[in-house]
Length: 263
Length: 343
Image (cartoon, rainbow over all chains, first blue to last red):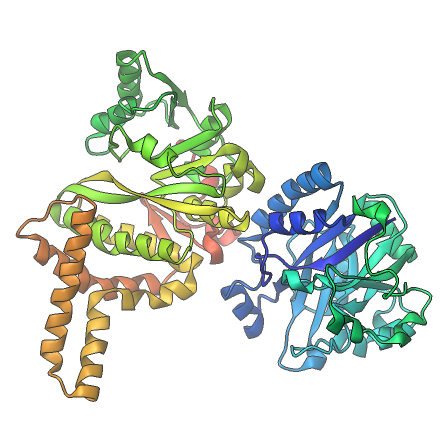
């Protein structure tokens, strides 16, 4: 059993921590697996180009460094913390319209893939690399930020394409996804260290990337609210209705990582 | 051969440092500098030094191809990459190594242009001693990595974390990318304030122009937003805008404001030159004025294209400083695949 966060941003896009700092941040807290998933925007749209110019996206120029640093940090994460580090990106199709915006996580990627084109082609290109494709925050995140509804609008058409759909992003569970029959995963979408207090996924598998991917495909997982320190305001935002699902642990009972995972 | 090459290379044998190894990498065995290096190694047997000939093609950047062997064969973990056109002081290595703290990934130096001759040589030296030195101070003041490849000290074990220098071979400015990679690792890029002198020698206006167009286009491809701001870092455009603003806001004579602005800018640049040990002559203000007058036309020329000419060969740059390896570019006048022995 291992607790994992599969949606994290570094300074390669709009995150605040470098990749080595993220490894130490999660490693010291006993996480079993993390995936660094920096934004990779479109190359052809104006908004995507802006993302490239202001450094909020991986680019063709930074991607080789990104992959090599992830490789070396994966070795360090394993040797120092016995933590699996999975290379990923978040293909970011951004539009001024929420219903035309979509973010797709690729976990276990190795090739540069700009977010241009239809989502089906992008998801298949991710899976052709042997990677996992996840629909990121497909419904309202309840945060003041651009929303990405495009994938949810096409959920029937895309249900077979994705390996999982995010059921939580940060501290909020998505009721719509939770109640659906779609395969699910919960992540923090961490940009800043204080976003660590959020829903995470617990896998019943070995600490190995392929075992984690298989656990996602087979949905051999559960969700747990993880917090680093006492935060009464955060507790008050967790609604009891979220405890009804068989996926969920009681957040007020299981707020910390079990002893078996903490060291 | 570079101006004063024998003295430049000899200066590395005279470094005052307890333990170090000199590795000279020359890609072409027929290069006349091979004989020079061989003589120097024989003259200083107390210094551990080796000459490594040939290069390994790992990518389109010929400098990286030239360095890849010494990178692998160096005896120690700390590596100092230096070009052959700089002449260093005996305490150079000691000064650089003093900055190598655990949180520092790379140490670079300011380069001062000395001994220029010809129109291009004087303009080149003025560029290095004012605009370039100012830019280095500015970028390091805001903790933005700006690295001069003529002087880079780093640990190989750290560079291997981003794939080693082989992973820099796809970029034209491997030095700048090395600095960025250090930042991505959470390490700082430090600048040693002691300048290293580069002997400029004789140079034509054409070679000055081409070199600065090349550097400008590399900067444009790597830092497009910073490049947009560059015209305002020259004295002329900022002076014109300032004079216009003073006229509109305070009804001051724009001509007088502009002249005062230029004099103050010149005084600051003279102070900058003094701080990096550059001698000033009665011609200095004239050369300074010529370089400042060329700043905007040069910027416009840089902005108008993405190709650079390097020793007679044309290279197309992509965003981020990547060398364009597309088929179209291979059909142009140069392809790195055919550049054996080139550097």
